[in-house]
Length: 187
Image (cartoon, rainbow, N blue to C red; front, side, top):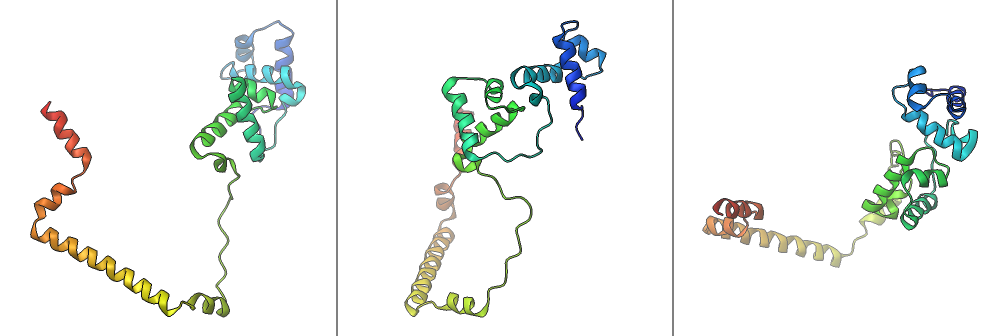
């Protein structure tokens, strides 16, 4: 449920626009926690009319292209989040901020909608699929075994080297952050 009804918002906006009281006075008169919501309602009403103060769809999914357009508009024009929100008829400038942050961190892929909910249970593969998976050639089996033997051999060599001279191994594999701390302490 919305915290404030559309009628209430419209009443406060029209009362403000009539010019009798300012933001602070109206907020105090109607027991609003601050003048900020009223300021936002007036701004939205001035730019979008009655549609600006109407409650929007919850969790509306915006297309990737729409998100990109808003971000690019803001970057190209130097508009603020609020000005961009007004341009694209969005009530929530922080939405654009989060899109921009995601875009900067993850690129276009980050703007794609995420699947919601729990993933469906995968079906057990039928017998014909299992047979297809098991069809590995003898050559591939030998290559796999060869690779595993190489890895085991390399591991055993390192283990032997460590047992012969543990201090040399520790010096070689020292974390770099510890050496930096020692240098700073000596300065």
